[in-house]
Length: 396
Image (cartoon, rainbow, N blue to C red; front, side, top):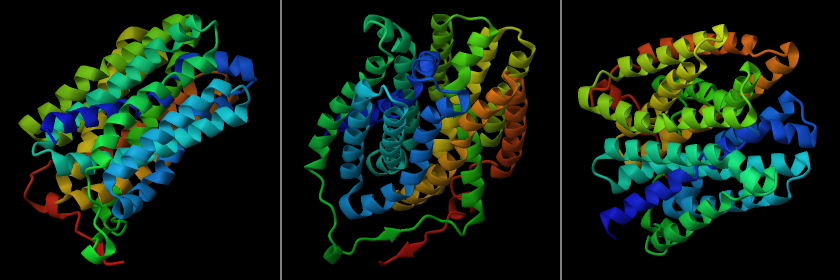
C-alpha cells in the first residue's frame, strides 16, 4: 500500500480519540439540568472514558499479539462508533455513563497501538507523532466547537449532538478495513513473540506516573473548563467558544513543540516549560484576570505535554513490540491516575461551590509533575535512556 494511505489511516484513527470526551464539556450544564446530576456524577462522563482507557490498554497489547494490531484498531473504531451512536437515546444517566465507559474502552485500545503503528509503518516517527497529535486535537476542537451549535440545530437535543460523532468513527472503520484484509497475523506455529509490560523497571514507572499526572491535568480541564468559564461570567455559548480556543490553540502547539524538541533536543526543558505555562494559567484563573490569556497558556502547556508524552515510548523502546508494551503500561496505569482528575474537580466543586480549591490542588499536581520531568531528563537516542526499557519477552 502507498505511504500516503498509512498517513490517512493514522489521521482518521487519531480524529476519533477525543470527540466522545470533548463534546461533553460545552454541554455539561444542559446535561446536568436535564438529568439532575450533581458535579461529582457529571464528572463521571469524562472520568469513565479515561478509566476505560486505562483498563483496556493492557488488553490491547495482548489482543494485538493474538489477532494483529491493525484488526484491534479497526474493531475499536467500531466500538467507539456504536457507543457514541447509543447516546441518541441516552436520556437516563445509566445509559449515558455506560456509553462513556464503552467509548473509553475503544479509545483505550487504539491509543497505545498507534504508537506501535507509527513505529512499524513510518521511518520518521517524530514527524508522525506530531501529525497524530495534531489530528487528535483537531478532532477534539471540532467536537467541542460544534457541540453547542449542533445542540441548537437539533432543537436543543444534547443527546443527538453527542451521538453525531459516530459518523466519524464509521468513516475511519471503512478505511481501516482495507488494511485489515491485507495484513497477515502470525500464527502460533510461526512463533508469535509476546512482549510484556515492563512493570519491574523503575524508568518505565517514572514515565508512567508522569503520563498519569499529565492526563489528570488535561482531562480535568477538558471536563470542567466550560463550567469554570461560566462561573467567571461567560454564557454557555461563550464558554463553549473558550473550550474551542483551548483545543484550537493546541493544533499548532501539538506540532511545533514536539518538532522543536526533536530538532533541538533537551526535551527536559520543553517538558518543564509546558508545565510552567500551566502554572501561570492557573494563577490567572485564581485571580480572575485575563481569562482568555489563561486559556491560551493552558492550551500551550497541555497541548505540548501530550505529544511529548506520546513520543517517550517510541523514543525509548527499541522495536514495535516494546513500544506497544511501554505505551500500554504508560496509558493503562496513567489513564487510571488521570481519571481521578475530573472526579476530584467535581467533588471539590460540590463541596466548596467554587473552583478555587480545585485550582490549588491542580497547582500541586503540576509541581510534582515538574519534579518527575526533571528526572526524565534528556533523550540521547543511543545511550542509557534508550536501553533503560529492557526487553521482557515471553514465549507464552
